[in-house]
Every structure is written in structure tokens, then in C-alpha cells.
Image (cartoon, rainbow, N blue to C red):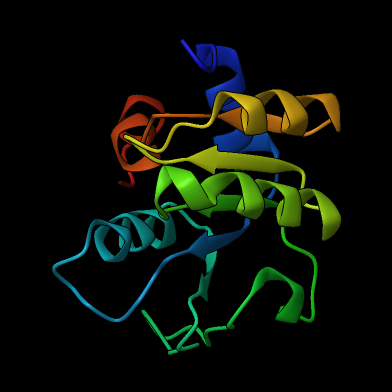
Length: 138
């Protein structure tokens, strides 16, 4: 409903390989941890974004998107829906090409703002579910 299959495919295959995963911590019981591992196996460079700025899956973490000293292609959002719109706005501000709100993360106003800013956007879907439909490396 919040993204067609072509947008999903384009983000996963053509948008770029650097994915900032907002809300990613070193807690293996959290969904973000597992999804980040799938993204890595699919060839994506993950960038953990969490207030604690911890290293996850061998990648250095940053406290915010603004702290990342290199370009980010996709911002994958694992925060509460109430906070997701602010993260989408930050993604626009740092020049990301796309924003992906995970399952259950819904902010329709942020979806519209992000798309109006020219970014591709997916909401309420999970790349770890979508990747196996595209590729057998997952």
C-alpha cells in the first residue's frame, strides 16, 4: 500500500549500497540486528545509527544521521512511528536517496513529505522479507 513492488526493487537493487539503520543496537534479540545481517549478506554496507553509537556487525555506529561523515543511500528506520517522521526529515537533510520504514512504522505525513522531496520511500515493509524475493544471497 505504501510502495509498489517496483519501488521496493529499485531501492534494493539500484539505489546504492550504503544503508544507515536507525535504531540498530548490538542487541541480537532485536529485529534491527537480524535485518542488518540480512542486508550485509545481500552486499549492503550497514551503518548503525543509535544514541549509544555502538559497533554492530563489525560496522562503526554513529549517534545520528548527521554524524555520519560519508554519503548514505538509504535510511532504514527501526524507531517508533512517533519518531519516524523526524528521522525521514533528517534523511532528506543529509541527502539520502531513499527512506525505508520497517514493518509497523507508519507516518503518512512523513511518507508524503519524503516523496515530495524527491526520495523513494517504502513504509510498513521489511527488506529482509523482500530480499529473498529478489536474490538468493539472503
